[in-house]
Image (cartoon, rainbow, N blue to C red):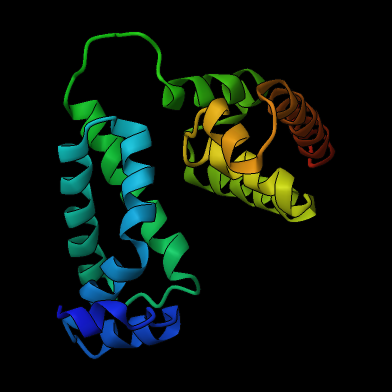
Length: 195
């Protein structure tokens, strides 16, 4: 990709998806141009190793190329986020890392584990129902709360990083997370989950 091409604003997601459907390899370049930094952040928050995260990004592009078409995602960003998270989590598992000081990724899931715990069943249908309930809950949150929830529990961001991004104190972010978790608990109980 030449200098002029790099300076051009990225294509919108719909145009990038059309490149995938046309089997035009520029689709990967455009995806990389628009989402490389974001994908790296997601993967690095899980793995903590630059080289592994770079490898996961390449695997994400390859898997995206093989899945589009036939799939036509309504959100390219959400689609590739799921792919990079799964690849990064699988890489983390297969590396068989010894238990070490708990990192932000592990902490974020342990925080939710106490809230959701046994609700996370293995059956795909039930997991899908729970995912729908959580997504419905996220739609009720204001922009800042949604950012905090997704950053912490989906991207595995540290409390300090979220506080820095929002120009808040660490304790303010912790208070908002506690409030969001209480709201999520109430929303899930309303959906019939016993927590």
